[in-house]
Length: 262
Ligand SMILES: [Cu+2]
Image (tube, protein in one colour):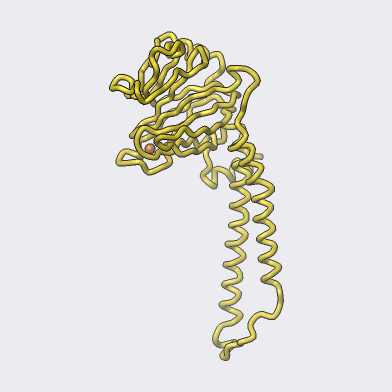
């Protein structure tokens, strides 16, 4: 186990703080192992050919070429390993960690946040205490209501929007609906092993389950303008108790506590 941690560090992988991270890391390590094998194999073969078939040993070219099937077997073996990685690791991982969204049996089993990217910051729209998002429409958009929330919606009062720092409870799936106000951004939290583009006009869901309390960095993984490098946010993973307090505080602050741009 420790050698695995050392290997992950050697490969530059960030700490894994999510429930599906182990599967992602296993796939990454498997691919790296195959690439290392191919690199060593090809390099060895290249050096062998340089020495074995140099001009002094073979002054005349041989037009018949290779007569055995070693290369065919080797290629078959590489294809088999690739198929094992794809069918054994990649497809099941994708089916589970990307496609299979957590439903939860009752409200509150899943933390739902609408993530809004804008040059050059992240905003998180929370449904708050009521657990329901207010309606949203283009016609409500104004300078003090950039996301067009329906202020007459009864759920509006419990909703709130935060900038830069998202807070989530530990050991509970988080579903984020990601969109963008301007250009294409990419919501990426490496320790959660989650990365999803933010595209204007689309609401794209992604999910992860944080398993470790702590503070992690949210990155923008698409070159999105001059200050792209500074487009980072914070993901704070806290206990359920602390999360409930945080939600209660923000919900009671009244709708759109921070209605967006800050
Ligand atoms: Cu960006």
